[in-house]
Length: 251
Image 1 (cartoon, rainbow, N blue to C red):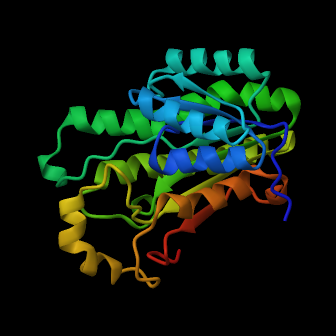
Image 2: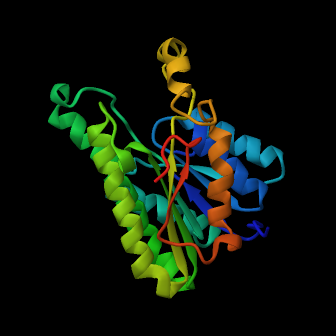
């Protein structure tokens, strides 16, 4: 399978840790130059960059709050100045507040929607002209399975990510004539550094029973699919929502 990304430039939002970090390293391992976006976790983003460079790759960290349009435009301009273009956009960054809907606040709704939905919109809007200009590109959005099947205590995040799915399908139709593919990867529960260890330990047995593969996901379960969708091997796949979720949902 042809997943070589030599000569390609990839921007990974939230690329400084966990799923985003593994995606950045996977893309770099296939030859891509990787722009690692972070909002606050500079040390972690620098660590991802260092791990890529240590293996002979090229990468650089870029700070931007993706919910702020001007910051995204400035980041994309900086990546273009440094590396010439952006061939692959991975909208990975997100923010989720797990709580009962009736106990949530408008401020919390806004933050989740700003990061999860507007963040993806901002990044797509800033990067699309580069891809259209070169008549080629890959956009990969990451969402949680709650956006497809619904989940208690995640109503706002599910709504925001549901919007991201609709965004991806619409852009796939709009950008197809420019040889730009747009796909979405839908995740099950992935254990990361910011997972609640006490909650997982208390509920692990119950949780894994909901997964036919009988385990919770790991960040490196996700990166291979994203890398495939970033590559030439996926050139006739667009507008799709692909689950990487241990069988949690089978939509």
